[in-house]
Length: 138
View 1 (cartoon, rainbow, N blue to C red):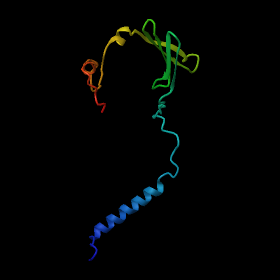
View 2: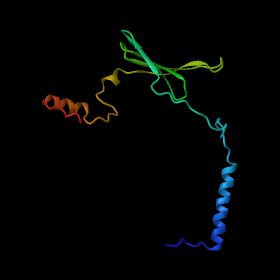
View 3: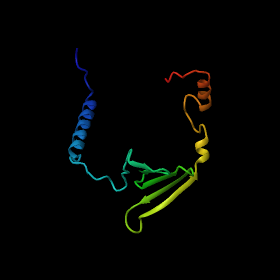
View 4: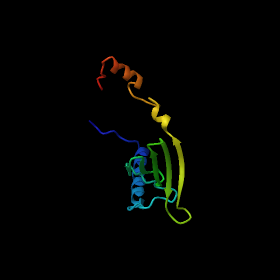
């Protein structure tokens, strides 16, 4: 078997392409910059950071939002109210605590399902149990 023969201009094109590739590799910086360009901003990703505690009447849960600000969720278990606060640090001009919102959650807690993607609704599951059927739990 013989090797294919390139036309004369094909050989020159191949050699020119290889030459340009070699020049490009030689001119490429060996140590790329370690700092991102000024237009890029890294957003810290903090998964699972938070704490929770409770007493006889309140539940407090802390966490962080996607900007890195601290969040505090307070649930009054006696009056069924939820309140959310955001705290940011920094200089005197930028540090603050902000009340995000509040809600009476008594009726929320009384709903059997909302935006529920479960295999069985509460009502359907309740009917199965009343009939003595137990779902197989797949």
